[in-house]
Amino acid sequence: MLSTLVVYGVARSSNRILWISTRIVCCRRSERGVVSEFVRELPKAELHLHIEGTLEPAMLVSLSGRNHVPLRYSSVAEIEAALQFTNLQSFLDVYYEAAGTLLTRQDFFDLTFAYLQRAAADGVVHAEIFFDPQTHTERGVPFDAVIGGISDALAAGHAEFGMSSGLIMCFLRHLPAGRAMDTLEAAMPFRDQLLGVGLDSSEVGHPPGAFAGVFAAARAEGLRLVSHAGEEGPPEYVWEALDVLGAERIDHGNRALEDAALVTRLVAEQVPLTVCPFSNVKLAVVDRLEDHPLRRMIDLGLNVSINSDDPSYFGGYIGDNYVGTQVALRFSDDEMAGIARNSLRASFVPDHEKQALVANLDEFLSHRP
Ligand code: HPA
Ligand code: ZN
Image (cartoon, rainbow, N blue to C red; front, side):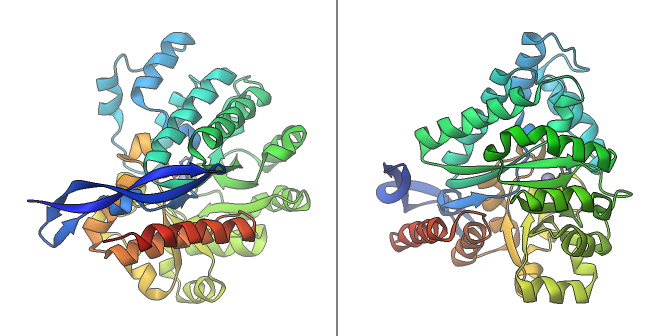
């Protein structure tokens, strides 16, 4: 059954996105009522997005040909068939192989700009984007090709879509901490292009504490600190990310729910958790979207946002995650707006810009029928 609602067009003023009510469209109905595209259009921040995880099968095939990097797959269909994962490592094996086709500054520009186009269409007004330099520099790709191509695209995205952004350099935790320190040093000529540092890759068996030194050095440089923890790893890794690394946000954090004292701490300090529902289903962290603990997290008072993680691998971008999660967990539009507000507040933009982003969300909401 179809019904109508007002959807919001986008206009730009001084490179800041403003939302205006412009047209009438149709939307779907579910058994519980209207499932609007309202949540897709909500002005939001994306805070947990690996740029290498936006490499779409079609671009992968094209890069493989353009750069003469052979793959195990010879077609988009074969790649899509390979996107069945049983855990984080089974995904990372495919993700690192695919990332091996990225060689030039132009490749990193194309990858990033394609993501920004999709994110802008999903209401993203601010994106804090992870990249994994070691995945590329360990193959001989120059650091400046990686960061240069990504940064050029972020500048183009700001000009084209009015989207603000920041870059978070992630260290690969399956490699020794010394290599992370080498990477931080290699990044210093590009310090002004970095917002922060993070920790990703294979979690179990690689506790955050080993990276205390490189996180302390990053903090001394004024970089913001985040860390993946509690995706597959135990609650102790979340404690360590907070207490040993000084992480200001926890990426995922699902397994924190197993530790009541940790939940109390996260609630008391309102530590943002960047939750990724589609990712959690694809990597078997939860069985079905309907079983995702996001509602429980909100009921406990945790500060959560919804993000896409590696959208070309996990079945959808941030708008799909918002729509799918709303349907599966029966969130109201107001609850979804609260999640979008959390995402803006949990961003690392300066306070005055944050107030403007939140005011823009409120303006969008005021046009709701
Ligand atoms: N977890 C850890 N490392 C990653 C992920 C993830 O979901 N995606 C890319 N690197
Ligand atoms: Zn992630």
